[in-house]
Length: 141
Image (tube, rainbow, N blue to C red; front, side, top):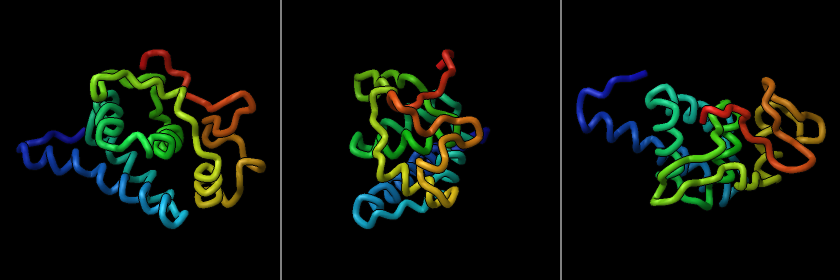
């Protein structure tokens, strides 16, 4: 994990959510996600900040309209919590955030060359479930 030596360095790392959000907004406009690049940005965020801090910062800095997209990449990175505490005075139950089917299909097609009908698991992470969305099974979060 990276140690920040200056406030400026810390602020630059926090603001990397702008890149993630920019890609999400690009998906909203053009239907294109650049899934590998997005997954890389998310993983790098967790390399800089501790697990809970990274989760809180991501949900704080990314608008609620894009949380369903964020959830897909948190699941892929195996960093999706059940709840995120204290974001704008609210606790977020991530399990209640619905994954957008179209976005999920775009991600699966970009990462694996298939859609959710042909691919249900990625590295042991459940991406498709008949009775709802999958959420990481780690009770400690």
